Length: 371
Ligand code: NAD
Ligand code: GLY
Image 1 (spheres, rainbow, N blue to C red):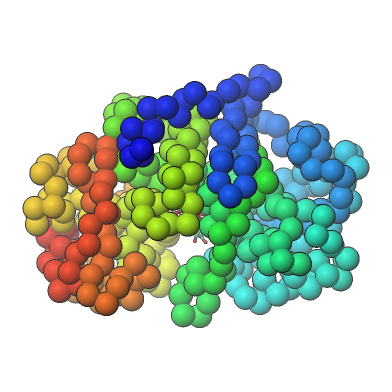
Image 2 (cartoon, helix red, strand yellow):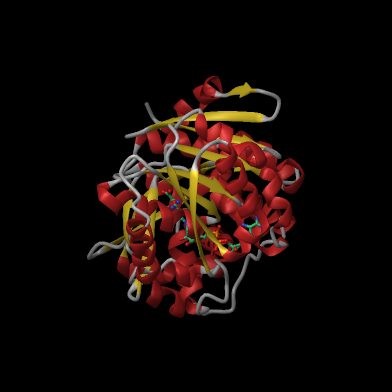
């Protein structure tokens, strides 16, 4: 069944447990629950007890997040009988490195962590990706739990099982598909996020409306994401769940989630990472949307819909690089084959499609998208 039809069914799996928690079940190579609520972090130990026998826990977090929430999570885990070994690393993308990966593996071995123990990732996408990759490979696979604390990690990186570290040659070049055993998204943690980081995550939320959910797109055009963050997180997780269940290993439809990312990555690279991922994706979505219309891949110019939503969420829509600069950098994208580039472009309002563009047409596509 195509994803667009299946989306009509997904509300059925949503249920409310207790007073604060919404749950979304993901059935991929592992079955797990994404729990979404506000203000439950101090009882996280009880919740993990429900899904995992008492064991040793390697709690991985960056210094910023650990200083805000680490002790609360640690206390709840220890109060419930888990033995906690914390591994805290400097915040930032640079920490998603092979050196840090190796350090966590050694830390785990030195503390005699076994295959029946647990890794817990407390933080944003950097922490989740790094911890997930450690969990996938330490002793050939140990359970892990995601506690995402950024908008981006709640709506995207904590769900679906992509884990990775960066290599000198590029981002996310070494990783594994490895699903967590549970995800706990406490929206209370988003209150301490810098505005800029919050907004960046909104780019990914808007992406979901553009690629697969016209109703949600309309909702976003009329409502503030910040004021409705719990609903927005839940809706995005539902959509991502549906995509992942259909195409866990990204053979086809999962590529839709890369809308705005090919040109976005080029923008990030051209800026030497001074333009953040979320901001770059926002601009990338605009270029892909306008470019697709201008070269006849889309019947309508859906940038008329996209631009006001991005602006309302304080996201940029243009950049200063030339089309030529972005084109050159885009050529090194992972989604490129010898002669073609897979691009995600709007097909209808709230629905995207995957197209293969001959590489020689890419410059024209970007130029038109930037006009
Ligand atoms: P991040 O983990 O670096 O977090 C951003 C910053 O916010 C960090 O400085 C962090 O310390 C801080 N922070 C996190 N939570 C906070 C909170 N509640 N309060 C205050 N500060 C907080 O970055 P991110 O934007 O969450 O994720 C980006 C990473 O995710 C990239 O490495 C990207 O490749 C990856 N990613 C992975 C997937 C996937 O499917 N696995 C999808 C999208 C992105
Ligand atoms: N963030 C893209 C994916 O999970 O496939």
